[in-house]
Image (cartoon, rainbow, N blue to C red; front, side, top):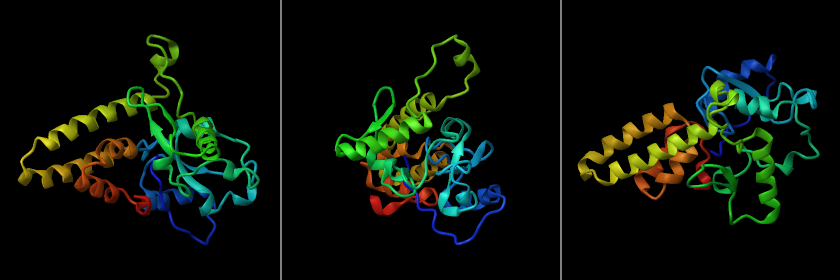
Amino acid sequence: MRPVDKGHKDKEYKPYTTAKRELFEAIGPYCSYCEREIEHMGAVEHKQPKSKVPELEYSWDNFLLGCVNCNSIKNASEINDSNINDFVWPDTDDTYHMIQYDPVTLMPSPADHLNEHDKARVSRLIKLVGLNRAIPKENTKNYLKASDTRVEDRIKVAADAKSYKQAYLNLQDDAKPAFVEQLKILVKYSGYWSIWMHELEEIPEIKDALLSCLPGTRTDYF
């Protein structure tokens, strides 16, 4: 999960939907949780739900971006000032290094190096937005509706990242800069930044490119 720095804005957004354009500018048109590109299907997402904490309905500091799946699963969850720190959040925590993905299933889980307290915080966020929902069985109603393809999309992007890594390593040195520029464009339009980064961060020039290709990426964690 990409850690982001959206900055602080000391004003209210009434209605809160008017913050969407500025959120896109600050952190890019990507779901703050699953990282899919959401330019045409995203919403201003409240960390502390407006139905539970109405005083934060118009507050920039309470905003993230959510896709239709993450937002609907989270919905009006019981989060408030008393328990918000029981979860990790991409705008306050190093979510990239706190969440790992199974190399085969691409299911997320707490990183092995975390202490038990932080593992619990990560697990709560994963459950909160359903990032570990299993892929429906083929030919079932849920599969045919394809209402939640987040895991399938992560698997596809991981396969693409492996292919691009091998292609890059096979290139002559003079062809690599142009390849990196094309890769940055691909990541912008495919989303799932963390999946690309996990596969390619061992290549310094690509790591640097990924850190700079999306707005609002929290680079001080890397």
